[in-house]
Length: 436
Image 1: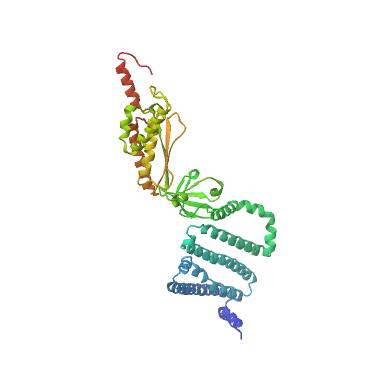
Image 2 (image 1 turned 135 degrees about the horizontal axis):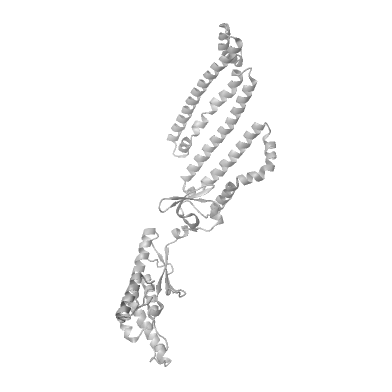
């Protein structure tokens, strides 16, 4: 007697017992079927538990003996659990026809459900491998700042699409190739459904190939309120942790379709740029008179420059017989020119300013707020807190130095300024009404 015949007799053992006890044969068949299903379920559950435990133990013992973390990630991604379901599924596949002998419809339904589950199980196993690969690559220095998650998501979407097609082909009882061809007419609908996914996929490739954004970059995207460090690049979104520890999600496609600011160049450069202006009142700019020479000769940073410059100017005016009875004639130094030279010398002597990168002090177009004097230089220290401290220290000194050159900062009048003006006017004109 072969194995199949012996197993079939074992399956009918309870049915034969019930018939011998005088139970109706039809009822005995269904009772026997119910008992066999219960027994099969318990056996499969036990086999599944033992198999899963055995496979997990094998993986754990193997991972403890290896230096790589790949197998550790396999365990955490539940790969052994999915692998342990193969043997119970194999037993169920070959047991169902014997248990349900005489019930062809039930056998067909079970086979259909098992085949669907096999497809889904294959997807789960592949997904586990993909997640393991992604997490492992993130531990490698070469892939630390690459959008690995985007690629694994794309592969997983493709796997699910094929699984979905196989399931639909199985449901419709058609060949997979014929089923795919028949979906050609619905391609436009599919493109519409997966539009964001396709755009995200294209964007993630361009972001990676063109090295637009890396994980760890500091970016500023005003439209989405993002100002912080990129922590994750996925197929659909880029996750940014702002400096206030909030998170902002940005559509991946917007990184190639819209403008944003990436501070990586600054972080990789030798220094961080300082660019600010002070506004000087135009009516405070004047020529330097001989009576003021001594004052500027006592300012250490520009004393030598002032003396040499004044000698050149005096020589020019004398050789060209310039009438200096009027100060405007000939060449002259101005307090604003000396102030610009002072700032330039001050920056060149400041220990926190990068000497090998350019440093400029320049005029900008005069405005209704005065003359903008813009300072451009680079801080050696690029750390945010230190950078702000250095910038503040420089401009504290510059603002405090302005009165020494008989210059004035422009500042919109406040309520106190208006009250002081009105009080002075009233004191100068006692008894008179002052109209607004």
